Image (cartoon, rainbow over all chains, first blue to last red):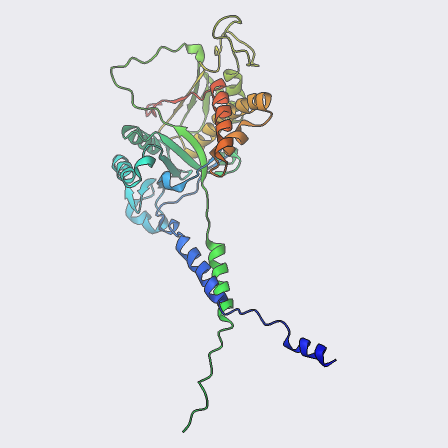
Length: 160
Length: 208
């Protein structure tokens, strides 16, 4: 009898969880570093239109973003309510687009420079005149692959 | 005064819980979002010396958008909901007479001699006003791309038993293995040849 009692006493040793915080912290730091809170610096309204025939924009390293829209309420007193272009963090005019693309393209790795996509994130209220100007600038610097970024949805919702 | 042993240890048992809390917060707020949109190619700027190729009027499908978002398709005011249907009818027309080298064997359209010869010749010309709203423009683009996709899906279903959009999505997916990719590439290319996307955009007009 005493033999059994002795066995029960020792039991299984508890798993040492002392390193658990370290593991969790490691994961935590990973997520903290990969989280990009870049969209917070958007200075223009950016409600994208809907479209159904979309393609996914894979591989973020080969995408250059151009934002277009009305300046947000914070900036509207200074820049007015007409749709503007935002490149990186500043408002720009169409003639800056070419240089911006060339600059961004030069920053990318050599092998990616020919496969870049320009993602146009344009507010649905913007006018086509501005977009046409941008497209013309893009053609001038031979950046021909564009993606009109949209939300997934029924395209006819845009018309309301 | 003699001290009795070491000072008591701080209880670190709840550290893991705190770390978990933070971890979950970042897990939830991280959006590894993939943007989606309509892919388009802009035409390169032609050298000024080059003469534009002569294209027969019947092979051009004109779409005009005015500043109020109204559509003029082939000189007719059209509701945007009918655009896809009309574009499909135009692309799939296959008007070239059978026996001629331009005959389109897979077209299922009306074979109207007044409309496009074959999908390879058919060109959609899109023109918009400078004051057209972007959302209208995207809707029109969406419908035109949709017309091409519908036709390509039809051919892909006939040839491979699955949708072209599905094949293409798999082909572009970085997780697809390379051997499968080669196979898909061939299929994508074949379908694209049957219905090449020929969508030309005129520069925006200020006058109308």
